[in-house]
Length: 428
Image (cartoon, rainbow, N blue to C red):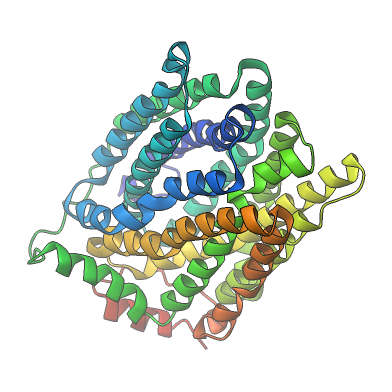
């Protein structure tokens, strides 16, 4: 079928739509905390709270979103969330004539964008397997990850320039336009989606939610990924929540310099996306996932250790970003593909939503915790604790059957039991 080859015209449209929206989003990822740190001069706790509010939708909305996505066509959902995100972002520059933005408005925008992002990501991960087929998942996800990496490379640097030249609030216009462009591209996709599975509808919302959670925790390979991911994201979100505050107030970096440091992460992620297949073939899928996570945690230690002359500080932070992004990208491509490959289509939304709820939901708690710690023991000690937590997290996966997985399954399971059998047959 036309929709089952990796580089069909419709896949290219999806790829381009994601690339455009990601570029704008990476600009906003830097602009939002810069407004808080430089314009509003918030405290470490307020910075952590802002980051936590942005991730709170993962706790509140992920599971209901999964049920919704499994009952609806995915493409219209993606279009709707793009339009909603654009309208919400426009409120920031529109508030300038009225003395805004203010801190509470930033929290509201962060929460709203987070909510749309949760729904969009669940729909996106559920949509890709139906568009390209399971046999092309690793190749397709590698291409999509290149977009993540390229936007992460160019977006923050561009964001730093725009913040320096135009002010942070006006940079939100760029992100709004990117979401509207993405919606137009998604609207042009013509491949029909398989109809949602309505033959055996779940008797209740609660039962539907439990199916997704039980699917994750009953699978011997997905369970360690979820547990490791939740632990790592708790500490990583804490580190990122106060990163900009640390960079501006303790290290004295400008918005442009911070943007360039973040861009180094994107540059490092690009070869990670290109090397993912080689790493999986050379070392096995499980070892590539675990090793990538461990090296990314090791790179995180460079953040609190940065010091000395300004060029050395910049080089240390940029190296940490680049190395962490490269190795984390290799791990994430394979763990995304594994989850997609072993999940039946009619459970794709709920399984992805459950993963988002557990893994990224802990990020809200981690960000708030880091903000509170940063206000009491200081920013650098808090960053060191977060980095050590990221480094220790892969031990969970190392002590699990995941370390023995060498190949990705390629057959489409119809039930989770079938999926488990498929994976078992690929493991020595």
